[in-house]
Amino acid sequence: MANIVAIVGRPNVGKSTLFNRLTESRKAIVDDFSGVTRDRHYGQAEWIGKTFTVIDTGGFVHGSDDIFEEAIRDQVYIAIEEASVVVFMVDVTTGITDLDDEIADILRRSTKPVYVVANKVDHAKLHHESAEFYAFGLGEIFNVSSATGSGTGELLDAVVSHFEEIEEEDDSLAKYTIVGRPNVGKSSLTNALLGKERNIVTPIAGTTRDSIRIHYNQFGHDFLLIDTAGLRRKTKVNEDIEFYSVMRTIKALEDSDIVILMLDAKDGIEAQDINIFHLAEKNKKGIVIVVNKWDLIEKDNKTMKEFEARIREKIAPFTDVPIVFTSVTEKQRIHKTLEVAAKVYENRSKKIPTSKLNEVMLQVIENYPPPALKGKYIKIKYVTQLPGRTPMFAFFCNLPQYVKDPYKRYIENKLRENFDFQGVPIQIYFRQK
Ligand code: GDP
Ligand code: GDP
Image (tube, rainbow, N blue to C red; front, side, top):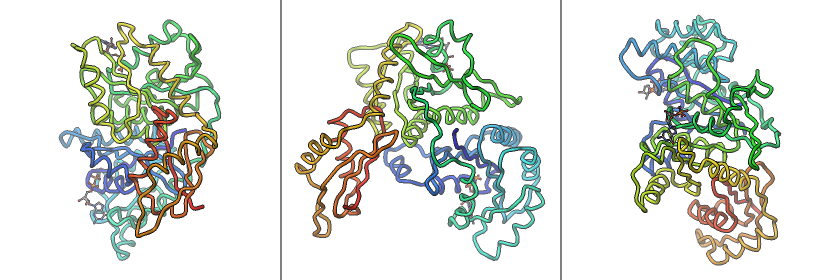
């Protein structure tokens, strides 16, 4: 099950400040470097070994005041339905407003865990002021200062208590999901694969799942397709809300091994696609990029190369990802897509024998050893792949803390060159020996 934490609340209480704090990481810095617009409203967070996705609902609200309040209410409904935990943020410096009360009314009817967070409690003397929020009838109040981070630890302890430590999944079949913005061709691809069968598909062990799993077993392929498109909402809130589709995408993604990120060739890769790409990468999913509607593009012999280059530039630094150009309507490269996905799945499950790994990588290291730091030499003695569902490698050395990012990237590139991990995020650790 996907672990999703939705932060709800009226504007200006500090939702995005908390979001940034929770999702803070090296990745965010990389995003800034690569010139990606910083409008991420969902990201990966970790607390005491448990990972989860955080959504800043405020980031999805646009428009005038009326539309605004309605949109906020819609989001609260969606959050109750789709998130695992809801964080309701209020502002201690303004106290309770009408909109706060309205949101609290909706949340009181929820069966999902809800945590009330009094934000901007920057000083201990503000602690008692937050007592007024007990009037919501939503239980304990967490005093937090998103600006300084104080109080966020207690909040996170409570939030992650709802999450499982280990993935409960042990299905032996590969799980694929097709994600992408509306209208890129996701349903068309699903239909093309499943043909007439789609109508007789039934959910596998359905009710507790957030999506339908379809068993595809034809032409030498055997996998589960996680399909969210086929599901309809239980309540009447508008299904086209971006926030809702993002929520569904995240759930499908977390539930899968391989993410097929579909783009429309006419639009190229956009900010939302890049966000999803990073989320898949952080979740250590295998990734295949599919550029669909290739039939609509006027091409010469350079078009594809240029297209590819532009995409790789946008998804940097993780660029070792297969890109397939399809036309679902013309039935072009649909099976190629499956072959590529199957290869990525194989790469993700790959186990390199320790002897082979050491033979190749110790030579690579000897050719270009880590630069000495403060007059100290780093000696890497031994490499091993760690057990796990995704590729992880430990390099044992005398001074692991002296190995810097550029060298880690060099090592990663060499692993990729020598062993083929295309489409797969890999983890590299340096450990004391
Ligand atoms: P959002 O609209 O709910 O996402 O709110 P923002 O995160 O954009 O924050 C609104 C304003 O409150 C900004 O000026 C923040 O700098 C400020 N703010 C956020 N958290 C804190 C906090 O813990 N203490 C104080 N004093 N200000 C905060
Ligand atoms: P979804 O919202 O991502 O599921 O997109 P759909 O599968 O509903 O497709 C949206 C529209 O794009 C439909 O009108 C499809 O017929 C059209 N479409 C899908 N794939 C292609 C393609 O490869 N080429 C062209 N020209 N149109 C396509």
